[in-house]
Length: 125
Image 1 (cartoon, rainbow, N blue to C red):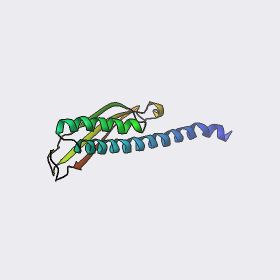
Image 2: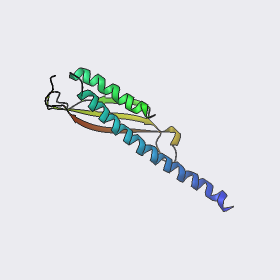
Image 3: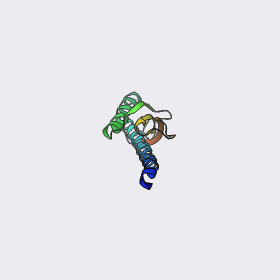
Image 4: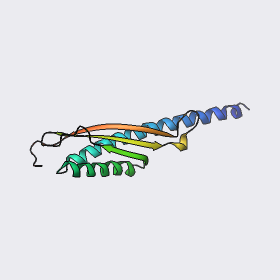
């Protein structure tokens, strides 16, 4: 009888633990995507091709780990694209969490991550 009364509380506890895990995992994956975007952009010959490569790298980094963003934004504001400069990438990902939503847990969450990667000094651009 006590187990029957405790079952709903146990289910809520499990839901909160799973949601916490999903939040932590999504945050880490968005951080990884920001680094991948900055790194891919830093290896290109110019800013425009770097932005294209960076956006593709961020999308690939998220897709390869099973994280689908409802809306993915990648920006490169603050980038100093020259030898010895740096590439700054910001990734914003709206993650769908409907499978763990409820009990005050939102169905979508926005995660944002920044990464800065240096451009090699002895490189011709």
